[in-house]
Amino acid sequence: MFESLRNAFRIEDIRKRLFFTFIMLMLIRFGSILPTPGVNPEFIQEFFAQHVGEAFNFFDAFTGGSLYRFSVFALSITPYITSSIIMQLLTVAIPKLEEMKKEGEEGRKKIATITRYLTVVLALIESAAMAIGFGRGGLLVDYNVVNIIVVVATLTAGTALLMWIGERITDKGVGNGISVVLTINILSTMPQDLTRLYHQFVVGSSTIAWGVLAALVIIGIILLVFVFVVVLQSGERRIPVQYSQKIQGRKTFGGQSTHIPLKVNTAGVIPIIFASAIMQFPVVLISLFGGGDGATPATAEGIGGHVLVGMNSQFWFNPSYPIYSLGLLVYIFLTIFFAYFYTAITFNPMEIANNMKKSGGFVPGIRPGKQTTDYLQKILNYIIFVGACGLVIVQLVPFFFNGMFQAQVAFGGTSLIIVIGVILDTIKQIESKMVVRSYSGFLTNR
Image 1 (tube, rainbow, N blue to C red):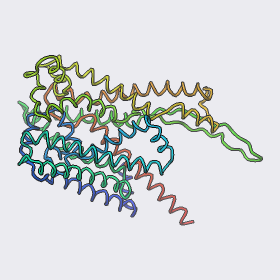
Image 2: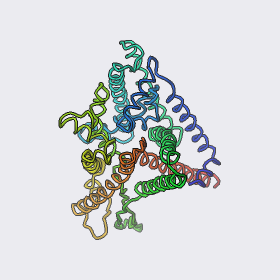
Image 3: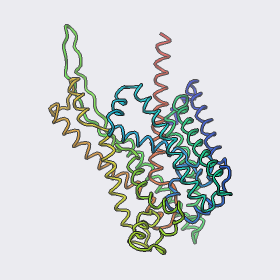
Image 4: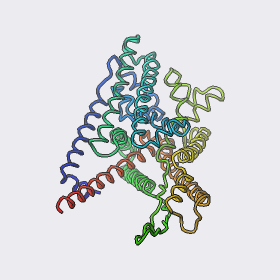
């Protein structure tokens, strides 16, 4: 990996792309500390101090600390991610959008335009909810219509600017721009979390021996999770495909062997995002509109109040409140469900089987047509379950330590999967550009 990066800097075009990406990332970090006009920063910081380990800490990790500072990038790129997921779902449900998707590059451009407009609409809604909900509690220096409009306009413009930066990185930089923006945000919060762990378990240990042991345990767990995520993201099941030979005149066509790569983690991080959003949405709403203190074991009233506490990941694995860990079972079920659901709308075994049949391809030992479809679906169901279980394991590690030891770590399995996946994809893209450059040089020399 390091050898590839070193070689990449020797190529002028890639070096320019890397430099452009670096400048854009610096602009993102500058915007993350630029305060929103008319906002009292102490209010949001006090709010986070009172809601440690809850849903807003999860969102703050995705914004790179911008939400904690309530900067111009407080919403970050999350409205764009939400709109992209919505468009993927609507593409399956609405025939007109499905036709656009099949139109090729022109259709993808139309869908991308709709996604941008939807991003702005979602940013307007989210910023208005935050300005009004938090504004009533003291977020705004002066709670009036003018300040609300200023905050809404600023946050929406910040999201639009991040979306533009992401697209520019894709065109003129390296990697998928939106993913790179999200990754740099997540990475920026990790040093703070590691520092918190260091002071809580190493410095705060009763003896030096316990401090050293705690440091070794923390490093070991992080490395194990890192390796597990790399294996989960890189693992794939290869379905062998053989193409029959065709003889036309004196020439023979086809006959080659290839494979269909099915990733173990077929749905990526989407199942965790969906499951987390559903579990935390009621908690966020209550906190947003001034009822955050109701979602705690001490103040919960009635069945509804205790259900809300059970949906809050802060109390999972907490030995003082074991009953609330039942919410974890709901979370696991939702993760597995969305892994199957999202894969079902993005991967169609019947379409692949039909395309193979038209081009003279077949899976050895399996007849083309329905049997191939059933075979691919059977393999896919098995892979989805393995991948979903892997996602659950990665996500449970931070929940366990947050609940059992009150570790208060904002980044978790979701963040690690995103970061590692984006880094691996970016490195592959750089290597592919280097290969293309090598072929171009070879052809030019000839």
